[in-house]
Image (cartoon, rainbow, N blue to C red; front, side):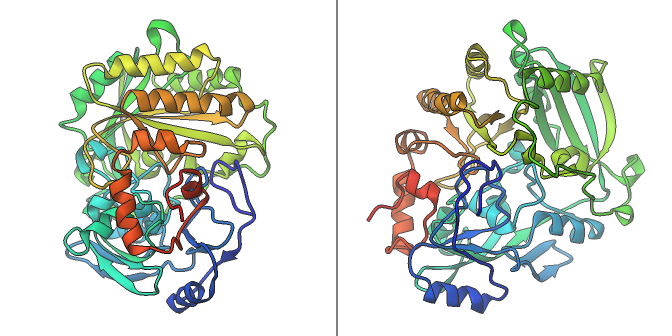
Length: 443
């Protein structure tokens, strides 16, 4: 039984776990029916699920080579971001893009074209990948990059595994001199003030993130905290690289919590406690990487907090415009009118991105968590319709219920992308429950 990180919709999958490249070739040659590569399974919905055949790449996780002077890493696709950080931060090199968890594979990061708190200046993960080695449906391997077989490179970036099995990647890391960031966190009164904070910091910060108190109503919709952070030198108080230790999980959720534990009242308490950490209008502090980038990774199996029924994480993009704050206020307010409140509320600012299927465009993304209930399942299509109407889109790596109709509205370049996919996989060998739901490949 496999599921996405949201736990909803687990299915029985014929599962392979190859240890060598020759094992993958044998699977591809001998398996009849659809296949899909799966890394750490940290996409939230059904994007990494294929009951007919799921190739789990967790053991294909080795470093192939590393250029110490240039920070260029060549590694198998099953290597995790956590391993990259543990191995190369002490050597002065840092991942160029970090999403909300370090427990993802490099292949999954490319297939979902993940983004982080620095998207406004550094873009998506794929923009820092120099090349990939891709195993196609016919058993051949193609090396592609932004210069070589560029159509396949960009169809695979954000392509959710539909072009083939990523075997290895060559990734350009960024240099760092310490294990610390200088973070400035400000209390924010509403969504208009949040947008102004992003605008004010975008030319000087390395990273920006906003935390929304989704319980705030009326004029205070969008109330929260805004943090801007920069890498610092040891001379400025940064922890020396020689002191870096791979973070350890501090807590674990051993069982599924009862559904009633996370409710609007417990959320209100959580938000109040969060604000108590920042009693003043602004707080400057030196923080470690894990505390800033991956606070939830400190709790193993935190997805069990939502109970056996699981949850949906919904991330939408609202294009940048003079009306962006008003649209975000309308969206958040409409959820509150339907008595739906999110335990998590995160806002980020993005710039334009490359690739036909990339989520990011210039604008603001909002990520929200909802328990898996009948009311939420009825509400999500309404949210999709609203997002599509206003020129936005939802992030496929977190999606679980999007319709084919709304997908086409949100991703107008889908036809061009599918044309490239069909060129390299004419027999539709690589599919997923998501691709079937969204009707990407039809015989």
